View 1 (spheres, rainbow over the protein chains, first blue to last red):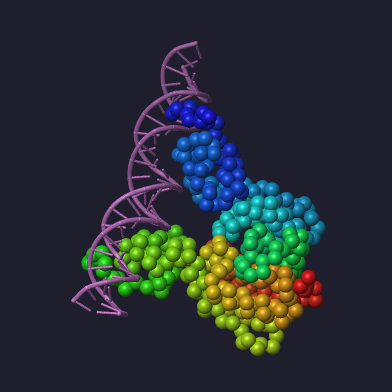
View 2 (view 1 turned 45 degrees about the vertical axis):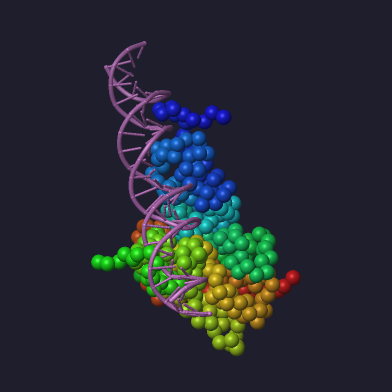
Length: 199
Length: 199
DNA sequence: CAATATAGCTGGACGACGTACAGTACACAA
DNA sequence: TTGTGTACTGTACGTCGTCCAGCTATATTG
């Protein structure tokens, strides 16, 4: 059971390994369990060693959140129907969120991610919205509606009911259909006849 | 600048005063500033004195969140159109949330409140849903959709845009109309022809 | 291949946090 | 008046994020 290192010796740490382990810790035991010390212990390193690879705990979490968004599949760039493209994008995002249930509360608390992946997805969405005839202020508004709707839906598809009474677990498939329905309503409203343009 | 008390002397603390000051602190400087020590200092008391009135920091926050929901106005119990009643209820909730922007992230993180007020509102909603022909599992699902939608919407009506580019602030009135539209779509979907009943 | 610079680590510490424990003195009931 | 309960104080414990000062394995240079 050798795990102590003498000063100067290397542990083969890397930014990627730190992020991955943080993600793993988050998945196993939630946010409260994600402690710089716990993370360090799992990596068999002193706590401060992490700071050679990560600026702070906050940016660590931000980075984990953004990393996951890499899994989201963007629709083909030349897709015909931009509204359908948006539907695909949000549905894919929803699935990715469901695949990382443990992270959903964090997305909620931070209202999305802000890293390069999030940026990239945002631009794709804005592009699709523009092609659907929505631009300027209205487009940014629609963007946020869609994001919040998706994260919000994932949030309660993920967790125990708010009101404890009765609490029969809703099957995931039914929830997914429900998500699709709501998403369709929203998209219809956003890109529909009353959609506003730049002013 | 006398503020120190000798042991045994009273400070006129009360549960209500503690909650109110906590709320105030939250409003002024956000969650990170809400510290038992900071709260105690503002009340001119030793930190542990708070524990005579509040079980823990967690329940303190829970209680603050639930307290605010007292301001939500429920529709008349004998309202004709239950869907309209739901609309009224959620709109009132939305307004209350906007009136306490600082708390919205907390509602988000906890996915709603759980105290007596939240309970009461939940029951009203279930009643209205039942009268709209939605009950059982579907009703609880609808409940959560409506709650998440409302909190989620309040969340980005409250805060800076997720994607920093362009960032022109959306006028509150426009957002409110948007909230209403989305809410109508949701309610139509929930109480609409395809609504499911108990199984 | 030797000398030097860099950077990945360790040990230790600091300040802030939530909260438990034990004691003190006031308020009120008897 | 005496007794009892409770609202406080002082103090302290354990944990957290993070900083500073070394030390040394490795990368870089000549």
